Image 1: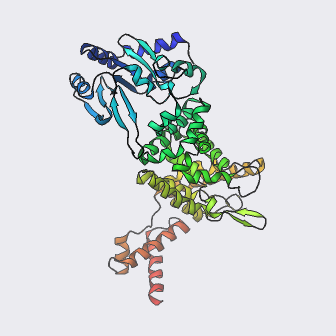
Image 2 (image 1 turned 90 degrees about the vertical axis):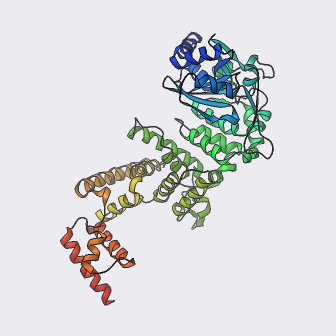
Image 3 (image 1 turned 90 degrees about the horizontal axis):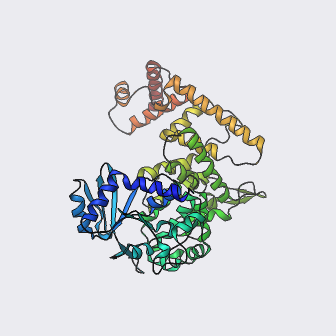
Length: 484
């Protein structure tokens, strides 16, 4: 953590920026308090990049809207019911929320909101002490929840220095008010590398079933943020250990007691976490300038969730036949329940289904036909499949690991060579549907689909043969079909 002087310099730089200075002056002129709060203050104090500008104010939402309308034409309600108004000010997106308190009723999936009157009262009701630090504007006064009435013995700055995640008041009260905070604790543990306070961890386990009242969309969003961390594994471990994962991703929890197919030192759960970490490393190596690939990370985490359902004990060993197919179906079902978009669901399920396809290549090299089919089946997911397959090698047998690595180097080389020679990414028959109907004298219908598939298989088996040869083979196939 930077020195206090360095942290305050960072906060002064933010306060002096055009959007913040403009807002501070506008709210002060109307007699309202305004404070930069939560994530931006926390990150500035930690020396991390500040990417969001979140404010809290004594102004009610209608008053906030009126002030913002006087500054910019780009103003919108993020959630007026929750007291939040957003705007674009000097090119920056800002969110301003009225001092508030949130609480979930026993049967509610959405928080009920009431407005507060003081910054101290607002901070006490925030999720964690490290997010309950405010910079009052324009006076540049730092307000820490530790000094607020009703807060616990620890302040936010103190916990930032110690690297601890804890709630401002009792965790029981905090997690009862908003159960999603339990997932946020896991996310911040992963993002910041902080430890969760023991009392907070215990409350997460005690109140895990309270998560059931939170909407699937909010849970999904937290899961995505967690998986987007540089190393999401500590957060995932916390979710599994606390029982929270069992409430929304039970397939992951079931991996804990599923022995791997070698019956030795690791369970499938530990293997999956290792694959996730290795996939993230490869993602950074291959796409250093891209953001976190959530589809890839979901697939890495879930690639073996079909194993518990397919585990069989045979000849003194354990098998998981067809766990790839079963896992794809389970992943599709679970991600749909978490309200992931259809494209993400489809891509993750496809990667889970294909993650075993490569294994065996190292024992017997594939024909060009098999390589073409591998590329065709992977489609747009080929680059991700390369990463998943490489990351899936977690064996402690160094010789085996090297053999698999060399084998995958070889298949990627062959794919590149075939792609250059044959436009492999766009493998399709050399005759289209109209040409097929013209040659066969047949109108549209299922038979044309069969003819198209014959030509596609021919293309995959033999590569480009030219339109004339393809036409001859099609006519020979058609004559045989007619005879039969």
